[in-house]
Length: 119
Image (cartoon, rainbow, N blue to C red; front, side, top):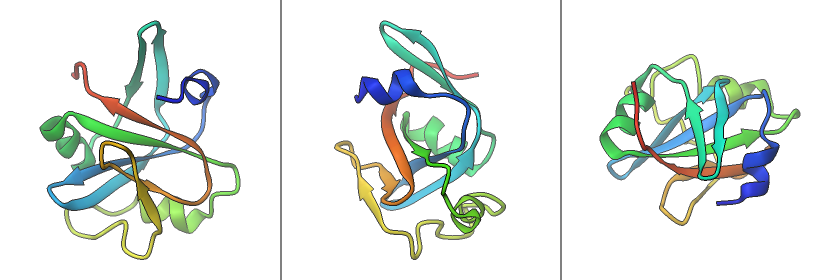
């Protein structure tokens, strides 16, 4: 993990990237924050299809969006369900070392996360 990105996180917008089987999906969120630094633990809040996939797989990529991210990108990952649409259609993305999707553009960095607990 890039701990510099982890320690530099502040309020902002994020795209959560997950794999629903072989299909990349995700959502826009604004609630991601550091809980502890050693070990590095963070909290993510989402209540949607992406949350279901995170619960099923136990893994999520957090893409930290820059200030210039177009509203079309933010809205493309929000305002509709990944259950019904391919949110990565037409979006260039890379895969993390664990195979999770992260948009290529308008990023400050990303974090690949393993779920330790949820409620």
